[in-house]
Amino acid sequence: MSISSHNINEMSADLAHDEGCRLLNEEHFQEALPYLQRAVSFEPRPWYYSHNLGNALIRLGRTAEAACAYEDAILLNPLAIDSIRGLIAAWLCESKYERTLPLAIDVAHSNPNFAVDWIHLGNCLLHLGQLDEAESAYRYCLSLQTASLAEFAQCHSHLGTIEFMRRNLIDAETHFRTAILLNRKLSSALFGLAQVFAASGQLALGIKYMINYLESPVENQKKRYHAMGLIDQWRRMTKGDVRSRDGP
Image (tube, rainbow, N blue to C red; front, top):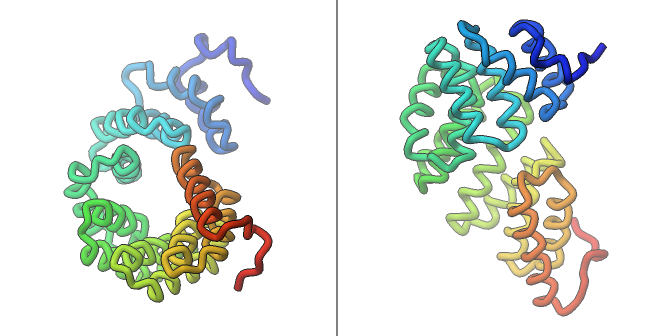
């Protein structure tokens, strides 16, 4: 049974944390927040109270606050690897790539069988323009038997981005298509494949996949507006609406 919100300020730390985690597990992130904030207001407190607060904040897109929560968890428990991973993810969302890189390198090399750590490292290197090093990180991730299909999809999508930046359109298309086979709703792969088709002059297919991108879980509104602008631009270039044309 759900606990009435007007009782939050009367709840113990443990009870508030348990209710916050219940809502967090049900993906009710906004509703979980006041309970988790109540839990971390007590002293002393376990490190995982701050960790779970960070988890709620990062899912709400409040990445700077999430980073602070993860840092607090690490201060309470320097060996809290999940909080360290959360901090890396939050810093990447905040575009703090140079600050993130040393920590991402340390975590990846300390945990060689964890795909997420190599993906984080690759993402950091990619945004810093270190394409060869990023490619190595993603390819290492693909060699891991412990990686999930979703993680394989992410790696192929990022490798597609690298090949697109190198203007190797055929290789980029191969990686993006592989990523979509593994995860049909992977927004980064749909966006990348649309760009590949547009760059190779296949604007109709570019528009098709960009529309598919808009129907996927797009990360933020800014990217959505950018995609809509590209569709309008490509439609003007083709002198008509090609939404209904068939693709491969």
